[in-house]
Length: 141
Image (cartoon, rainbow, N blue to C red):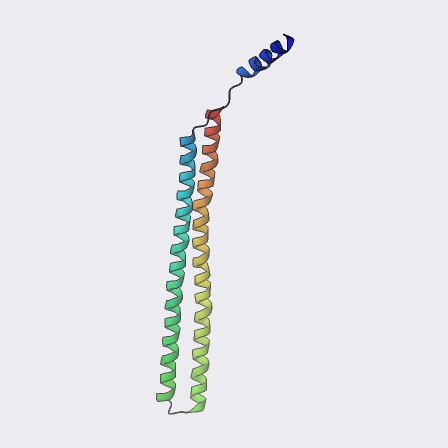
């Protein structure tokens, strides 16, 4: 009899205990918004890579045209005079080098910009998700 009373008291103690109820629809919406943020950040990165590739191709084309033009000029205008050709080659090499350095700087800035934009999207969403998680926890309590 004493064992039955102890069992009844045990269950009575825990019958007043309430499990928090979570809004699973809201949790699903939080996850959906997280995926949307990842998708948006991915799109920013893809657009950045495309812009970098386009700019790299433009730089390459410009430098190749500059070299081809300089080569034509050296063989036609100077009649093969070595000292003038050497000066022109040096000038072209300097121009191409400076152009490459400036292009690398520009392209690295483009890469940094797209990376920071993608990070900003994810950072903003992380903050929002933390706020949403707090609201869901308060409702469940």
